[in-house]
Length: 299
Length: 341
Image (spheres, rainbow over the protein chains, first blue to last red):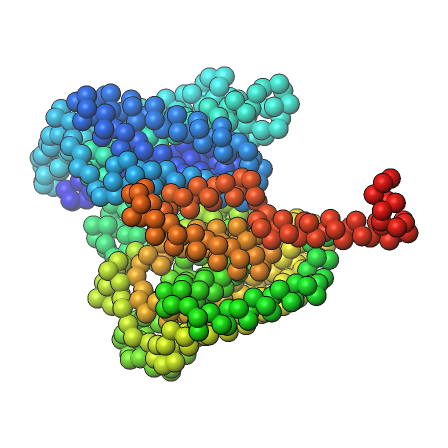
């Protein structure tokens, strides 16, 4: 029992990382119809820039900030110079972001070498608490994982408020519904495209920066790994849905944690199988079911 | 326009193709082993890329797990040879096994692409290849994971020259078959699906069926190229199931010309040669160790500035010429007069 609780806790904390990747991917996909196959590269850049700044300045906070700035800037460059030229051509978008992902992952190898690098956790988050629960045993709570959950929740709330309560968010949601209509109303939708893409890059960078101290070892391959899981979350949560990706992240992360512990042989197969089943039977996403229910209740 | 173009092969083109084929056949008698192996690899990759072009260029499916087929075929050969002994019967079994395996993947992908569109297909196929790679990595006792599985191959394939001719025959047969397919009624429907699926549906074509057939043909041919690649390399590891192999297939067909089929042969020759060149430059500067950087950059440049590839350029030029000729004939004017006007 305590074992399951620990696994759940670990799963939720990794869900926070998936959420950072998947929510930005999902919004970019919803707004621009672009699957950013270079999102993993942004994640890796976040991790490496974080490590560099963290070691240089010794400040965890500066490291995180630098990673987000790096993600924002690279995302901005991706959109402005490359992706914006192929809007409307799905094939070219997929291929160009794939090419960017290869080039930027290789650049990591050029600058920092292909071998894994070690990252330490900041001292104030390095601890572990053992919580004694009457009757069920000891649950192990890593402080860093707790911090991840808090960051995930904060980002989810901020993102939700930004999307539902502000004018910018309203425009983005309107753009997801119909980009043409938005630009017909005199709003510069291209500016929003660039900003959303860059902000998505910043979130991916943040994800990478937060992942580095969690695994304590980073290599250029981690981006692709996380990107695949983020794709699965995006499909399961419904493409273009912010809250859907939050629910999807939790679902996938907890599932991976539980299966990874009890049936490790299936840990890589199970999520993709679920993705395939969702695509065949519910292409609109598993958690758009929640939205449908809510609508039915309102009526 | 595109339909017309496929029908008209000019005499000069036939002459060039036959001349190239003869030059190719002489290669093993004049070149060293390294070159012979490289050209064999080019020819096998050309088949892999042509089958990819059926999907990307003809029917408009972006399959990001294409490594499943070249890797799968090579693993069938490798595992059967190491587990059950080297021999022609095992090779035949590998061919059958690969075909079935490729067909199963094709049916799954066909089901998904019919329901959820291009983007979802791209995402899921990428995940499929990744699953297969992790399965092969974890099945360490048989596949030896990333370290790879070396094996012996039966005669006549153990001779470099014979392997070269085998690859050549393989390429010619597959190119002919795929060309016939693109010219068949089903092939015409593929192009209709790529250009405007909705319209094709309205015209009464079963586009899902056409797409599934394309996936079946392409996947099986891709799998067979994996069998050939296994025979050539006598070694298979998880790198063959890596995303990189899919990117290679995309790059070959892209540079040669998407939707031109034979362009893939040209693209494969150019890129494999370029890769070898970059690897040779490793001693000059350490940056060439990261040859993938250059391949990736080349790939972006081609997608952005040369989306129709080399053969695309050639066909455009040919079209323009034919059009000019037709206009001149219609006007019934001597060419020099028309030019002055």
